[in-house]
Each structure stands twice: as C-alpha cells, then as structure tokens.
Length: 225
Image (cartoon, rainbow, N blue to C red; front, top):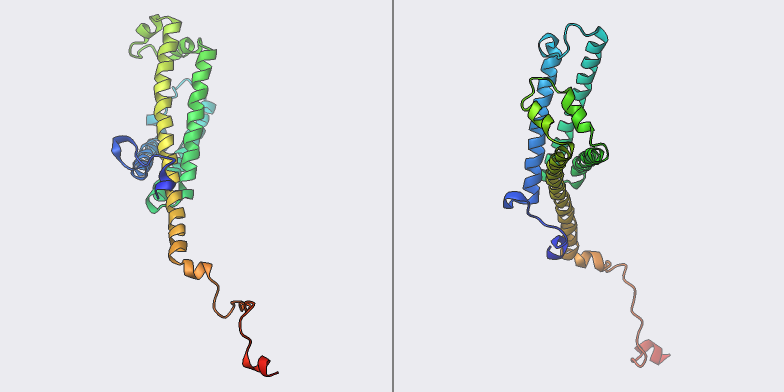
C-alpha cells in the first residue's frame, strides 16, 4: 500500500482523510442546491410574490422568466444527483461514481477562469456592471468612485482566491478518486497473493510428464529386451 499511495496525499483540510473530505463536500453541495431548488419551486408555485418583473413589463418577459426558473430548477436537481453520486461513491468506495462530480468541478473552474480573463481583456465591463445595479445598492457610489485599475485589481484578487480554493477542492476529490482506485487494486493484488498456488500452478491432472534425464538407469523391461 505504501507504493500505491506515494504519488498523492490522503489528507485534506482540517487533517481529515480525502474520502471524508469528499463526503463532506458532496453533502455541502447537495444542501446548497437543495435550498436553491426549494426557493425556485416556491417561486414557481407563487409567482405573484417572488417574480421580480414589474407590472409594466410585457407578458413575454414573464413567460421567459418562468422558463429560466424551470431551467434553473432542472440544473439544481441535476447537481443534487451528481453530488449524491459523489457522496455515495466515496462512502462505498466506487470510483466511477466520483467522476461526474469531478468533471463538474473542472467545468466550474474553467468558467471562473474565463471570467477572470474577460475582466483582464475588457476592464470596462466592471463599470458597466456597477451602472446596472439599483440605486439603493449598498456602497454603490463609493465603489464607483474608485479608479478602474483599482477595481480590476480588487476583482482579480477576489477571483484568484476563489480559483485557488476551487483548485484545492479539485485536488482533494482527485486524491479521493486515486485512493478509491488504489484500494480496488490493492484488494486484487491481495487476492492474487493469497491464492498464488491456485493461480500460478496448474492442476495435477493437466501437468506435463517430466522427461527422464540422461544417464538414469533404464527400466527392467528394457534391460530384459
């Protein structure tokens, strides 16, 4: 087992095992998406209370808002399924069940990276976004008074911290996947080692006769002939 685990770490934050960390992470993501799904379903059930559209908007926008909420609900339900698969796979030591959650983490990390790149390439988008915020947004005027370069640096620092944290979580899930795979490989090697007499040696009935060596005495029938 030492040679199998030497290429990755089995510990993550709070000095817990990567398997335990993956289970905690999967349960946490499931809770977040369950809360989001509950809010969306409640908004769909009571549109007059939760719709953000005003009375002056057209009916087409209301229908489009309902469609977006249905899509968001489907995505939240899919995320609950993926997180549940990762939690079950880490608990039952099934490596294939962890792969969808790992792919989601890679996709989410790529999207955040594209956001950081777009801010560097188009720094004026921050000011445009601030102008679209409502007037009662807290500290809107103070944030808008900052220079564009300062805003870009602050946003990039914030996104960099998020990307570093997401990369660490990706490494934890990947280490858990490697650990589960190594456990399966170790169990196979242990089975072969304990049953080596059955695996390595053929049955007695199928064994081949060993030819006699030169110089050995011949049988009595041959000598009589």
